[in-house]
Length: 158
Image 1 (cartoon, rainbow, N blue to C red):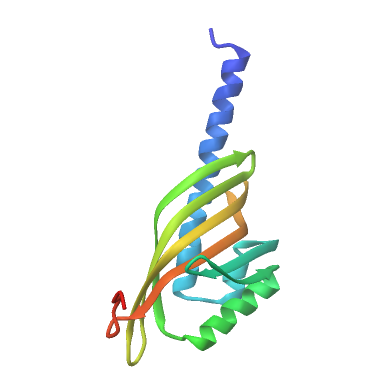
Image 2: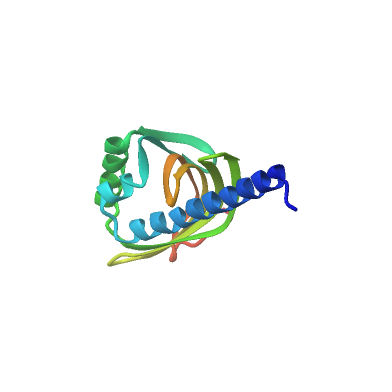
């Protein structure tokens, strides 16, 4: 016969698995939203008070707090670089922090195609998500861009 504590432990494990999977699926929604960027749609992937932090090679960059500021950031980036892009998220490592909170560390790759250049880049994401049932939203997202280069320039050590 199964004890109440065994049932409680099983329910906790199932919740952990369901919440980490909901959070991991949210990463796919984010990459998909960036491929056809509508700034408000990207910002809607964050909680109302969510924060987006950008870094370049580990150095602090900018922080945008709240959906309005996040949408403005993506609007600005889209205007500055209208190239067609594709985003890929790889090797996500999930950590279930507590009920309703999941952290994910992952790598990202992107390709871009403009009229006169092809670009490739990569970096890391550090995400904290709030999960409620099947719904996950970013509370914090750190984007650390390691490399973004035109294919003609390449990735030389110099």
